[in-house]
Length: 81
Image 1 (cartoon, helix red, strand yellow):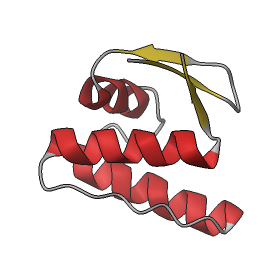
Image 2 (spheres, rainbow, N blue to C red):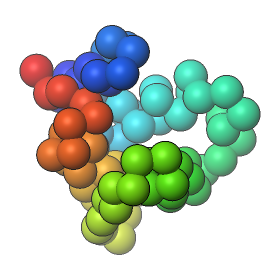
Image 3 (spheres, rainbow, N blue to C red):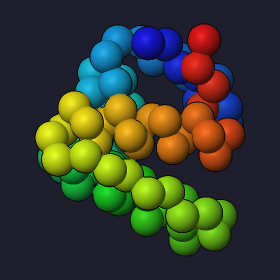
Image 4 (tube, rainbow, N blue to C red):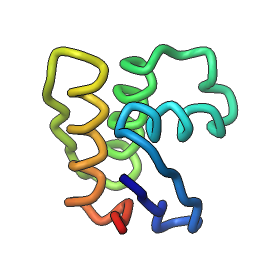
């Protein structure tokens, strides 16, 4: 999978979990969070800033990362190519 962040043009590639980990690694002040904490923080920030509620599903980190990215694509925050 390969995605582009619409707001800044950054491109990430790999499995959904690898992509979310890459996104986390370039997020100032958030690198110490677990994958789940990062996703929840990101979802909360989007809701607060844009009034958009993303619903992330799944039990495992892999499932939640895939769901998170799919929600981001559907909301128009990232572009898959």
